[in-house]
Image (tube, rainbow, N blue to C red):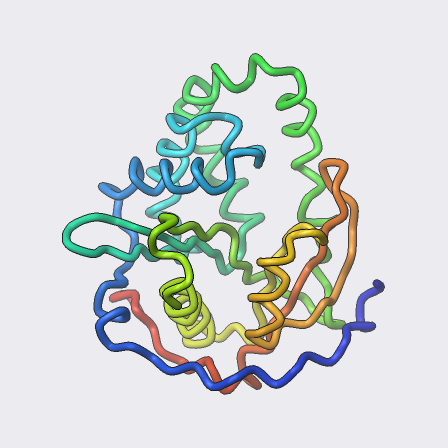
Amino acid sequence: MSEGDARKPRAPRPFTVNPEVMAAIRPMQFRDAQRVAELHHAAMGNSLWAQLGIPFLSTLYQQLINRPELLAFVYEEDGRIGGFIAGSTDPELMLQKTFRKSWFLLGPAAARGLRDLSVLKKLAETARYFRASGNDVMDQPVKAESLFCSFERGLRGKRISGHINKVLFDDLLARGHSHVKVTTEVDNKGANRQLTSWGFVDAHRFRFYGKDMVTYVLDLEASDRVEAVSRHPSI
């Protein structure tokens, strides 16, 4: 599907907020990196970053946490982090700056995963992700992106992921972003169903890592589910 040829989404159902769930969501901190890395690896073990290993993921999140472009939140219940979401106001810039500044930490942390030639091949392809996924979908630049989200299996189906998505989207709108995008595999029925239920539109199709991918875009200003509210103390 070409840019500007997005299908009209179904009107999303009203999102009822549970104050107890919202109270358990907070901004990600440096000390959360190891646990977030474990959750990321458990849910996305076949993705490139996960194939580089938990030590790499932990180091990556430690280096990302102070980047101004990062928006990341965790769900903490009884002192245990059961899920997280990570997004960015400008993921391409964020990752470029992080790898340039922290290569001497990230390289050794990824050493074990880099022994796999297939991983090296994917890593070389990563540089074209932002161009391939469509930086100018919806006839305008859309930089804000929801990148990673994962929850413990026992928490799935309890609408907690919907709450943490709302926190991210609210924060993006508060920062002046009118749209947010998410990419996923075309055959990921669960992700496709969840995104369309939020009002995301199928805005772009592309091929990446040998898979058919889709870029979804949500109009934050038009969504009845999103409010301009920030959960970061800096806003």
